[in-house]
Length: 182
Image (cartoon, rainbow, N blue to C red):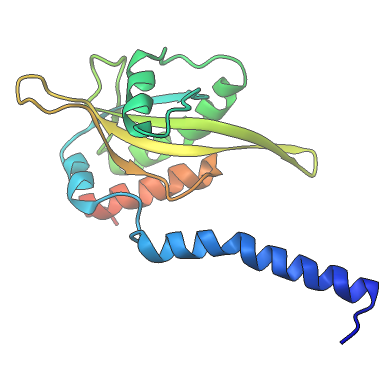
């Protein structure tokens, strides 16, 4: 069978697309639907004081990525700088709307006052139609308790890199679900 140049390019593109998608399909089939376990996320049911932290993580350690992220967050300055301040304000606005409506969450003044940390790792800024959109990963980290021998741990994370408003919207939806807020 002889293909024209255009048909050959289309066939090569289709094969390349199919092959590049195979690892994602196999990973989806092997991983659970949610990136967070519901039993650990239920720990947030009674916790009220949250600290919002936004910065770009420099974590490159893929062996124990979660531990490295928690260490960065626990050492980070809660006051964002530069472009991260703008992202922080977007996330804080949505959280403040949730606070006003349900009154089941309060803002912590600092790390010592917080029961858990909502951390948005800025991955990139995408410019679409002259509008800048921040994309990243959202994590919820419960602070450890040395008295009970519980280390800090990630109890919730976004399923993938998302637009900041979508990521915080997913978290708020899950918080409403575990707290029975309608």
